[in-house]
Amino acid sequence: MFFKEISKFPPVEDGKIEFVPFIEASKGIVKFVELLGTLFTPVRQDVQGNINKLSQIHSSDEKKFSTVNDIIEVEIKEGKLGIDALLWLKRALEFVHVFLFSVVEDSKNDSHNESLSSFFQKAYEETLKPFHGMLVQKLFGWMVLAGPSRKSLMILLSNGEDPAPEDEIIEEMDSYIQQLGSNISAINNIFETHNLVFNQKV
Image (cartoon, rainbow, N blue to C red; front, top):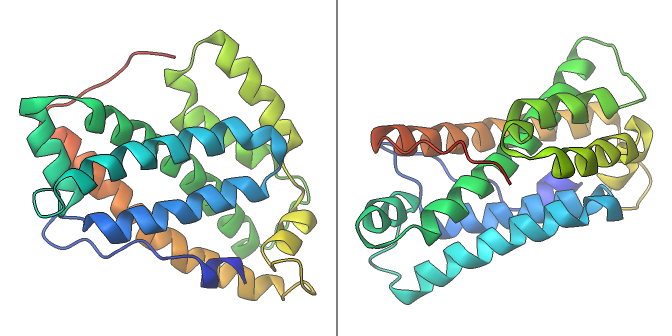
């Protein structure tokens, strides 16, 4: 199953996130977005682009940037490429987290809605929409309507094989988003600690 094969987000220790495990897990988000279909290509490209920017900073001095926290702390003094990249990567992670959380809760409540468009819409409105201009909002409006159905998503998460039992997929998904959520919270804490607030739209 998909969530068994991608890297899990690392545990947060003392508010710090190890860089390499975090980036490897973020690559799994790219793979997930790719599963959603070609209309989500701009999202996939944006996430991959921010991963590349952060990886470039890390590779410039792996010891200096051993944690995600290090990138923020150094770039507050030296620049903001890494801060911007982490900010937009975090927002994409939040989008996926809210969507997956909605699917999990829907299953736990025995609702099993076949259409997931309302979950995509909820995720978009709560995470990315406040930072998008009208043109980008319209583009995302088409995306959320074109997302896969519940049945299609379960097949996709079974990696093209015979569909795994939904309860097994949901269990793996639930475990995955718990670690994802802890990483998102830690990143938010880093931004808040350094009084970094960004409200500009794209």
